[in-house]
Image (cartoon, rainbow over all chains, first blue to last red):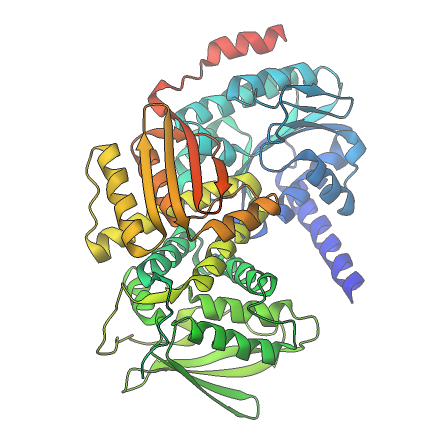
Length: 193
Length: 346
């Protein structure tokens, strides 16, 4: 019975990934602003990530919410090819920047500017890649909404310049609305997941 | 019928303000908001199991234990229970949730935030052996002020989730005692709700603190509406007002809060939130749900402060210190052109 539940969830995730693919049809290297339902945040992330990993060989996953080790485990269980992902971890508490072949932990250097620079350094490692930022909402805890909007605007601009598809995630929250409205014109699509 | 007044406890206003804040923080989601509150119920149930307030038994027995636990903690004065076939009729006397229920509805919020009922739903939802679960089909206030609800046992997962509107609670009229904000509620209930609040939004990760900060906004709104607690414009005086209120209401025997341009801190003596804080730290959960802290954070954010990571120092059980570095939003600059150039160089 537990397996049936798991299979059903996996099928549902694939169905949703197909829906995502349909809504991005015709957009080459889409830059997506994803508005995720907080009642099913993890599922929404997995569905969106499945779409990107199925269309692009490598991905840069910037995590501000959960340590990359937790995410890697969750994604593996969901059938996402974790070995195609490079994690930029801005949440794990380390005393200084730690760089490895599969991830980089920013430690105390997890402010907006350093996140941008870290992404720039990693982006050149891969020919074809996507960028996944999880999430803009977390940045709002510590930063002025105007600064977060500028950060997101810069990142979306760079993604276009690099020819990189990707998604900036936000959780659907009341306070988010101002940020979402500001960013919508700079993205190819706003997806509600 | 008199409540069992716990010898030591927290004033009802603290619990109600937290539940109000939680409901208001997720109300924008509409009926989906109930799913978020249900997660708090999961956390309440989990805490009660971990602390031994509930024993691992089959769900019907746990549900009865839960009601006893809430009754003994002063959340209601008595429960009558009757079952005929698959219809259960429960009557709650001296039910402390009624005041909050009325207030939420007056704000257009139809989410259900009773901690006992949220935990009750969790018992049935989490039980792998239960193939049925109770669903509310009727709820009303009786002429003597008691709250009666009828539930039908249905196949698990078959019924749409109920909110207060679906339960048809009708107009809530409080009994003659009115809404006694100073009534004492047992500390275990407070702890369970606080733990539930912190872990309930845990699936969101670190960003859940944003939602919790919105709970803080709801807490301040509640205190302003119900107790006319107005915070002065001066941040330091506001902080002292909040600290004084929470001291009087039983959150801690002593709260000393300090504020500078770069740091906010609070020292708690005999802090009732400590058992929750210790459990969260043991489980490596960084989220904070203390009502004073959430209200404090919300107040500072409203005044243009960005709050950095909170750190706790617990030298001994009688004394706890919270530190939060601050920065003014207006001083945070993100120089897009400069960062863009650095990115290009990288």
